[in-house]
Amino acid sequence: MDIRAEDFAREFARHPLARCYLIGGQEPLHVVEAADAVRARARREGFDERDILHAEAGFDWAQLADAGATQSLFAERRIVELHLPDKGPGGKAGSAAIVEFVKRDTPDTLLLIVAPGLVSSARKAAWYKAVAKAGVVSYAWGLPASRMTAWISARAKEKHLDIAEDGIQLLATQNEGNLLAAAQEIDRLALLYPDTHIERAQVAEAASDHARFDIFDLPAKAVDGDTQGALKSLSRLRAEGVDVVPITWALVKELRTLYQAALAARANRLDAYLGKIFLPAPRKRALASAARRAEPRRLARLLSQAARLDAINKGAASGRAWDELITLIIALSGATPTIVCGNDPFHASPLS
Image (cartoon, rainbow, N blue to C red; front, side, top):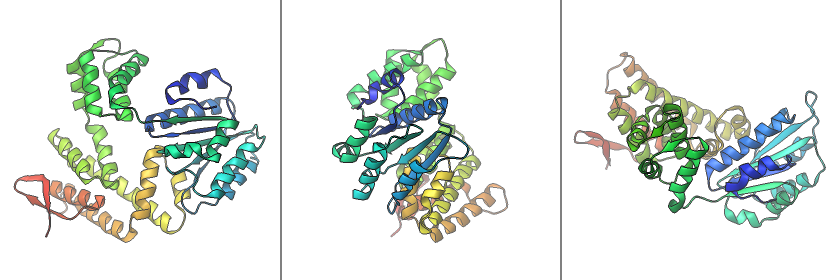
């Protein structure tokens, strides 16, 4: 069965739980919410164990067969969750392993394939069609900008929110087609203004209270190599009066995670490491990509640099904390080293 992303919630509720699901595509919000829905319902129906596999380069596809064949001593039913990269399972071995898995009559095993960013050409592949025949596939295309306003309006109604039309327009403009960010904004509005009409000014006020979200968004941008985006987030946080200490904490936390992931990648244990940490699937995918690119020794130097910044924050060392933080962000993002121009530390020029 092939279910359109916009129909998934309704159709999923109407039908019995299938033996296998493939949730993928270009819209991260659908992948996150649909996969969460499958996991939650499976748990309610007695699937108490969950095995997570990440099919990265070098993945041994025998692990998938073993996961389906192994009987648990503690629970009768289990979810086998397979995370695929954007190009799908890759070669013939991966495709054959998935096809063989879904052919089995395994009522006590549910296969959930999660594939954020899956290329549309994968929908023509034999493994994709085999999952659709045996269970359910749902592929999410990116939402056209022309439909953003309508989507936000419908989402607000689902949350029982009454938002003024110009407030809806503001949300659409602020989030620029990012449904995940728009959904977070709507959830925040529901907490701030329950059971009341929400004007544009209230939407703007809620949007300005981004500090706690930007604090965690900034390190992710740096790890993804988005130097300008990370510096823009830092500039906004500073303008809103956020102290340098929580920003440093969040950045160091991300840096340590990347360092451990990079070490695991060098030891061919990245799958195992990712399976132990809790992150949304899109962030795990980005972290895995960054870990493969990163050099652990360089990250160790950056951790030493971060330790100096922490000492400055605590008054144990001299220096300008904001300047040190900017330098660390630029280094983490892999950009060309920069120098400060004039009095604005957020606009830098490459060193010659």
